[in-house]
Image 1 (cartoon, rainbow, N blue to C red):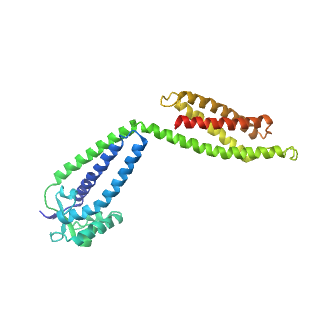
Image 2: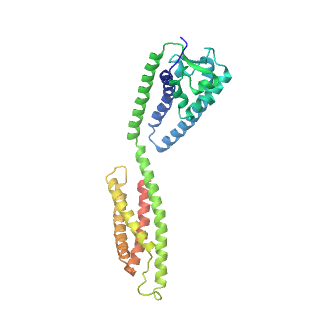
Length: 311
């Protein structure tokens, strides 16, 4: 039957080839999704990456050898196609090597035009075929089998992907990931607050020392301090909203969470009071300075509780 295979028949062979190897990775991902610990999931993904790299490198060797000895990869074999030279003879190894490793990739790099050219070419050759004077021939009427295998592979891949999605959605590791993200966010906020508090304390100390020399119209804080306390108000309101989401969550220590909520409410009250005076350009009194010291102490307690709750 040695007739040149058309574009769509070659596309079917290509899809079968990719779905065969995709099934391997889909099944591995499905297996990884059953890990119930973050460390297990992490190591599973590392193994998957190593296998992906290994299979990618091995795939180049596989493509060359199967094409040389059998006339094509698995996708072409089960679709009844074979790669030969234009006269219908077996392709020489050097040409196979050049076609599979270089010319084939060039057809992709040319925005896929190397493959689309098969649609209009009188000999149904792609760019990679023309470089070595090869072609893909129909040697057996196996396209019905190829189509059946394509549907089976597509269904199997879809089935395992759906199982994987369900497993990931129900996996308890999701809570562990959320806790880790919350802890990282809390740490980032703590570092930012530490810088802000240091700047505020330094500014306040400098103002107290120069109270006797500054003019009555000079405030004992800067615009930077105003912006910092405004940001603190936003942080505390955000924390208050997030805490409500975790109240009642049996996986978290509710006693400590209630303590954290109580402290956060006190912190919010102080930040709103201090920011309110600053935004109205009022002088900070000794009582306000005491509130700032209380704030620093309570905030440290809140950060410690957050780490204990979400660690």
